[in-house]
Image (cartoon, rainbow over all chains, first blue to last red; front, side, top):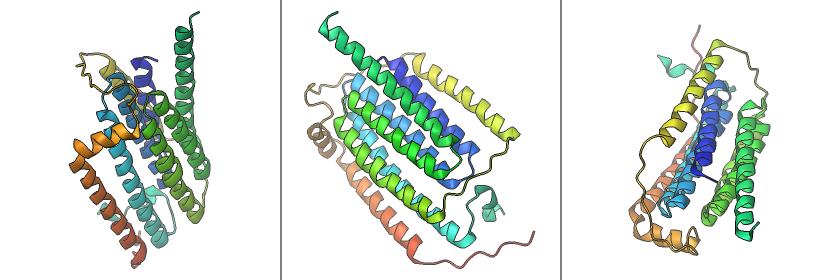
Length: 99
Length: 180
């Protein structure tokens, strides 16, 4: 399959992730949308590493997976702490830091 | 038809089907009202992406994607959903949602145009075809050229683990709601 198909699929998944991050109020689904965006970038890196016959894209994707795993762990711990103190999960109501 | 062209056609068809399935699964993630269904769609999406990695000669990354994402991260998500209770979310149609869709359609067009239009510089690596994407090639590259980044990543994971322990172990005094 050509490069245009890869670009189109990757851009579509990235935009779906952006829409999900904007329109959803559940922080868990917002996190899943961030994962979608990271995954689309990973796919683009891997596909172009295959097109260009260079392994740098795959190494970059490996580091992105590492950072995403660390980010998910810390983010879910923060969500859990917020839920323990506030007993609700709507991001529109978490506005203590608004000033 | 020759065998080689037939094989190429079958490969293109498989890539097309898996790519479209990945996009549809990602739509399922953001359109389901219950978080548990979103998580299941996300697992399907990860598996589709692992198949695409495999089709683009990245077998090591495909296995890593299955183990780390579809295994560890999604199990963590499902545990948290089971712990917090997957409540359905009421969606109301507002002006902001319509604006989000418009913004994102413009973003999609811009991303596609900026990626396809304009000069790109071709670089060619010299990896032999039978070694490309294997754990051996990735390991050789990772431990020679990218060793500093590798060590920094291990430090990042350690900091994340310590941070999560601090967040989970020490209980905080609940913040008092302000009078409105």
